[in-house]
Length: 163
Image (cartoon, rainbow, N blue to C red; front, side):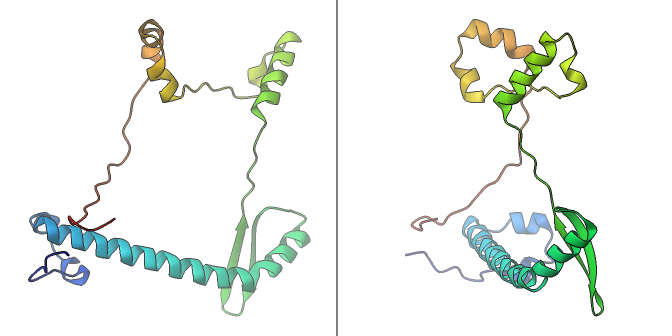
């Protein structure tokens, strides 16, 4: 059972505090604040999804009709609903069969043309494969490899609590 925190700061109370003052709070206070903030963010995300679901129900058919009238299946359409301008965007997501593209690139190359005039080719090396390679192969690839880091996340959990 977690220990009761005396003078527990709330999200509202830390809203105007300098980051240094917040960082100086006890670890258990920081853990509780982080849990409160995650819970608030999750709740806000669920509410946003709920409201956007209602908006989609209200305007989906109108957006479909507006796209049909514009002669397009995807993209952005605008229409008015009283004092509100509704902007409905349905992005196009194109996926290409990589094996078929590779075969087409070879056909283009075999025909004496430059495939780079038609397609962009990129190479990727899965990190798991790279670390499993023999040292001599890794050394050959090392000059072509750059390692960057993503954004660090730190999650605090009070001892004794599942998280």
